[in-house]
Image 1 (cartoon, helix red, strand yellow):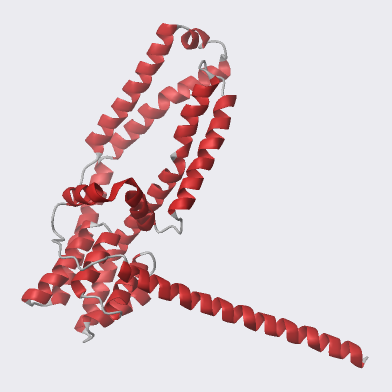
Image 2: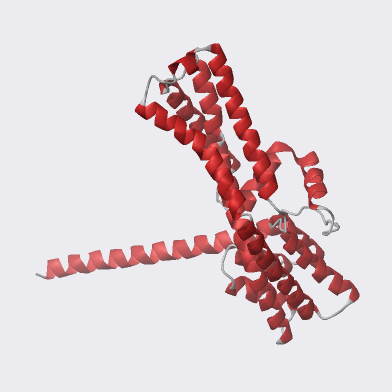
Length: 319
């Protein structure tokens, strides 16, 4: 009986020690990851930069792309998407999508050589991971744009309560939800590790490529140089952003008819084609085999894309 009790005690002790070891390892990995993120935000900026944050966004993007190239553009896209993907993982995903698309292309019955079908569908499929990253980037930026007025109000209230600007940044990073909370924590970490305010705000504006963030960074830097009530400036900026959201909602409601028209005109030919293939499988065979029919199909695709492009240009209104 005593042997069984000792054996059970040893098992419980071993399980307890193992759980403590796993917990300590998890805590240490969390601390290490947090420290690496803090250091990464400081080292990303390179040398001290003095830039005008209010210059035209398109010119800034063109200037950045001239010296960076495609690889740096993909890295910037991954960083702005908030995904934990590396460039190597993105390329591997594109290669896997290309292979899967090529295999699917060999199975599709289209009047074209199998190699051409596999190549075309493989190339199209290889861009799917990039589209996923771009979708995540757009969603993340839209979420941060919605969080920004709340963050500015929090900063203004904190400074009116007597806190310093750096302490207010720390409070915003702790209280605000991700993804914008993470960026404010990175901004505070740069300040906490000794980076200058201009460099920290410039890096913040580059990591979050939103016009409102550039306005915020410019307002803080100008207030440091010329003086003024920063809390009142942030309140006014928050009010302007909320008014722009309201105007954007009105524009979106007014353009709903145009967006519905674009959707219907885009899906109607595809739905008609699918219905004919299902109900009358041989009805479109002459169109597929005849040279004139192939030209008509190609012309229909081109005009469909052009029509959708012009409709999007009409209904897309920048606010």
